Every structure is written in structure tokens, then in C-alpha cells.
Image 1 (cartoon, helix red, strand yellow):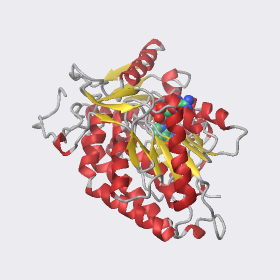
Image 2 (image 1 turned 30 degrees about the vertical axis):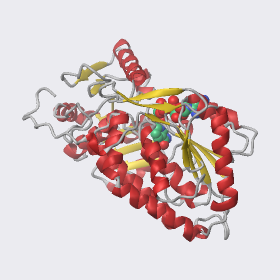
Image 3 (image 1 turned 90 degrees about the horizontal axis):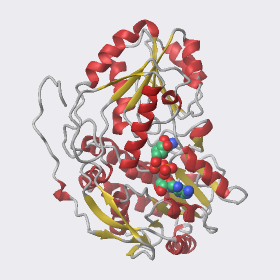
Image 4 (image 1 turned 180 degrees about the vertical axis):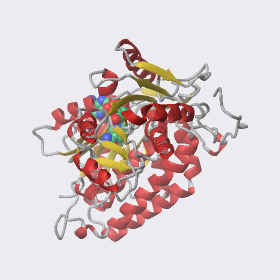
Length: 478
Ligand code: NAD
């Protein structure tokens, strides 16, 4: 990126650690099988190189996967004592650690995220989730669901592309710990790490059918959530599709959890440690190219410090290194798909049209692949669409406030309610503001911190149900 103080020599991670097959089938009943439907290509968004051809599961494939999950549930998994299920989960967690480098490289290739994030955040958190829920498998009577809580049955799980492996872990680890079996559908642009996870299930000798992976797009997801023999639907993705799923399962006995979009406020008061706040703002919106449901995409800064804070923020943004996701120095990788890039461009253009002022890091974008520079908009009002809609990219909307009451009012003025950040030196102000924010997670003097022991989930159009922690077990027990 231009204007950096000094250049880093390239430090690319080798991709030879990953063995990507030319084509992949579906993982059903413990084996890879050919799909009956068509297939699609998954590409590297950084280069547009085709990585593999992947089966697109049709309704009959989904039915076979649900049947395999039902058999495994009835015959093996629901009958197995929790302490035995725990052994499999521990084994999976350890294999994830052992194969961590391979998983991280594959995730960065298929998703476009920087290797330092997939290696240092995604994969370790994935392993931590399996370790954490392995610990619960034989202690479910302490989950707060009575003395003898029971699993629900077969879970149909649909996940997005922004954290492919991490969302898989959030879904599969608690489901299995509670004695459910699963059919999981990864997103169509990022199926590869879920398929590598299927290999890990084989390596861990997980009984066939306990985990099934069906790849495909919206129609495959629809067939899965609408399947009559699915007892539980767990969905992470856009609010629009979440609403369609809620309508599809209404009137059935299926239990549902929905983890949807967000438009989080990151609130910086005038007494905040400014350099730390700048780091938190950068982490909040540019981590994972802003493809984060809980991204701090609305910066609310107290008017008296806004000029100074914006100066420092722009200076910091100018040092972000954008480029090859496999380079260990890269801070900002590729946008996950051409479709997502189009949406980011459209909403940013709307910001210009509505009168906000765009500032972006001056840098040469690679000529191949999907790229968008770290960008901020000032002069944003609450009515602007860039202040209301989820852009899901590296674009920050900056608003100002004068009093804590105004900050809270603006922060809550959104249809979403997934997360928020508060930056101030005063503990009492943190408690008071956090208490008034309608958001599932409030970070104080930090942002984007994830831990398997803490529940995560939204208010309002950000969805319902919690994942993570003891609360995450409730979604998979009756
Ligand atoms: P998306 O809703 O388009 O797709 C999500 C998944 O649903 C994909 O696997 C897709 O194939 C599938 N799908 C699409 N239509 C379907 C249908 N009719 N029935 C069943 N499945 C269907 O979302 P996306 O673009 O992949 O992901 C981005 C969205 O996910 C953002 O809005 C983001 O905020 C949200 N997200 C939320 C969380 C959270 O925990 N709240 C976490 C990550 C991402």
C-alpha cells in the first residue's frame, strides 16, 4: 500500500501444505459421495483462480443426508453416554490444532481473508469451541435445563461465508455435545474448509452420519431447512434470508435459532484513550475486510474530539497493508465475491449521492480478484442508508454526538442489535451506557473479542437465540 513508512518484504505462507482436490462430492453417512445434482466452482477471491469443482446438493441429496443423520441419531449418538461423545469432540479439537496450518491456508484461499487472521483468530477459536463443548458433553444436567435434558434430534444448519470454519464450529460443537446429529450446509463461495472438516471427522472415527455436509447454494439450504425430518434449524446469515426461513418453519414443531445481520455502533467518548480507541475502531471495521456481522460499522465520536480522532484514524488506516491473503504481513485481504464487491460499491456510491464525504486509503488495488480499499464516510446523518444498512465491507460511517444520552439514542436507532462498543476512561459510564444499549454484546474499551464461554446473539432484526457458552446449549436441548 502506498505511503507506508517502510516496506515489508513479502512473507507468503506456502499453499503446498493443502491438498485441494479437483472436485468434491458430498459428505453423507461418513463417506464422500457424488451429488445427484449439478456442480459449481469455488474460486480464490484474491486471484479468481478456480480452486475446485463442488457438488451442488439437490433435494434428494439433502434427503439422503437427513436420513443418514436420523439413523446415526437413533442408533448411536443419542444413546451414547456424554462422556463418550466428549472423547470424539476432544479428538476433533486436537486434530484441528494439529492440522491448523492446513485449515488456515485453505480458509484464506477460499475466503480471501488474511492468513494472520485465519491462523491466529479463526482456527484457534474453532479448536477452542470444540474443546469447550467437549467439556459440557457429560455435564448437561448443569446446563440449566433440568436434571436430564434431552437432545432435539437432527439439526439442519446453514452458515455464511465470512467465517466458514468458525461458524461451522459454533453450530456443530454444541449440537454434538448435546447428543444431536447434524446436516450442515456451508456457503456456496466457501465450501472447502467444511469439506476438510469432514475428513477430520473421518480421521477422528466419528460414527458415520453424526456429521453430514451438503454443499450448494440457497436452494440446497431451502431443501434442508424445509425437510420434514429436521427437528432443529440453526441459521447464520442475512436478515432477509433469516426472515424467509422463519416464515418457512412457522407452524412446524422445528426449533429455530437465527443469527443475522448488524450495524453496530462503536461509541468513543472524549475521555477515551485515543490511540487504543483508534486500534479498536480499525479492528472493529477492517478485521476480515468488514465481513463481520458484529462489525463496528458506525463510529459515534464525541464532537469535541472528532477532528483529532479522525486525523489519527486516517493516519493509522494509511498503514494497513492490503494484498495477498497468504502473505503473513497482510492486514486486509480480498472481498469474498464479485457479488459482495458490487454491493459494497453500490452502497458506498449511495453515500456519495446522499452527500456524505468519502475518504479512502490511497493504494494500488491488485488487477485480478475482488478488492475494496479501507474507506470512511464523514458528514453522515442517521437517515443516510450507509448509516442504516449493513454494508458488510471495509466501510465506516462516522457520526458525532455531544452527550451520552444522544450517543445512546443514535446507537439504538437501528433495526439491528447485535453488538456495540464503548470507549471511555470512566467505569461508571461504561456500565450506564452498556445497560442502555439494545445490543446482544457490548465491548468496553475493546472490540471483536470472541470466546467460546460467552454467549453471542442479537436483539431485533439481528435474530434470536444465543450461541456460545452455557446459553448455546439451550438451543440444542429440550
Ligand atoms: P445469506 O443469507 O445470503 O446466506 C447465508 C447462507 O444461507 C448461505 O449458506 C446461503 O447459501 C444460504 N441460503 C440462501 N438463501 C437461503 C434460503 N432461502 N434458505 C436457506 N438457506 C439459504 O448471507 P451471506 O451473504 O452468506 O452472509 C452474510 C450475512 O450473514 C450478513 O448479513 C451477516 O451479518 C450475517 N452473519 C451473521 C452472523 C451472526 O452471528 N449474527 C455471523 C456471520 C454472518
